[in-house]
Image 1 (cartoon, one colour):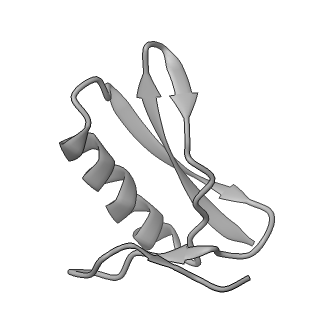
Image 2: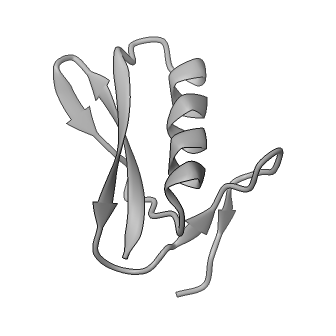
Length: 67
């Protein structure tokens, strides 16, 4: 199990295929997207199948994981 971040833009929830090992990592990434994108109205984190394919550590940079 993994977690994905989605943002609400133009009344549509969208994501970019990134999956995180923990909900807090996904939350940090979603909040970061909201700060960088101008049209984001809201964000959410959902559980998803599959393994994590990236990491977003606290005070770190987004890192792709080997699958």
